[in-house]
Image (cartoon, rainbow, N blue to C red):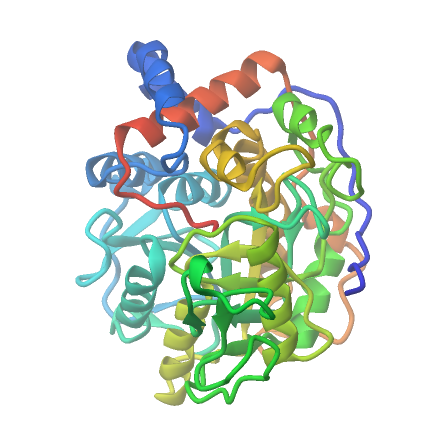
Length: 434
């Protein structure tokens, strides 16, 4: 498989300032020390998690200004762009950038994220909850709500995920062209695999892992609009990306590029699965499946738990005339590697993923890479209203979020403690990365 071209990105060395994450850390000041000790004993749990009450608090914090805003006017809210996140920390990072001024309650959304927050530019932010069931249900609820007019809206799915060290690195934001469902497969226990098979996974109603699938479900993969993906990459390729000292230290264990390099914007593809998987063999199978269902151009680099479910719900709403599914882009930033470095076992790599240091810069970089697309849509709405403009505006670079930063050791450790504290406090919230 050929590697995708890594696009240039600038990484500066200033202290990271993401107040949404700082708020989360300040909220936990009184318990950080004990939570960190507890997290070290439970490093295999989900570092990006938080229980329902924690997510409710996260949702309230992310929309502080929106909570005080007036109720929605009568009639549906016309939305230019809808940012779709999957759990609290992703929502908080985007809320800090979008500065919503109105909270619109939508019955049927996830209990911890029961409202859609919109700003004065008609850009809105919603959160699905993690996993296929939450994602599909929340998007369907949104799409068929009479409170919104989504017929001309653009959708940006934004989140963190795992990343293949052969294709990208910790903190790298990625723009997929293909989304592949890793869950639509047959599976044998590893102990039962025939000797001539390289994996226990094979597509449904096939006889070997190398046989191409029949694609009976209609949701095995989605091909996102090429012009939209190309424009998103173009707008984000020069953004300043955040990094952390702990992520840089972890990358140093790898002897290959791009794993041991600084974050950069990457165009590569993604697989969705409720199962959080890890290891060389499963990563190889993900790459194999991507090529089988989407063709030789598919280059799988990230894993997550929601995107194919979200696209399916958007597709159904499109068929009902509620929106245009092709107006959907996805940005996933690498929070953890899904392959171990040489000498690290798969088991230790999986259970120790929270120590990689990529989670905090990934949250920052998904916004930095995704925001220029949102800004372009708002600034040049007369063009985007009709579709992807043929040429990007000359000042597109002015729309990007400035200030690439490297976390100090203290800030990185604080971010890791916050992440691991969430891990220790609740295993119910599984991560949005595989």
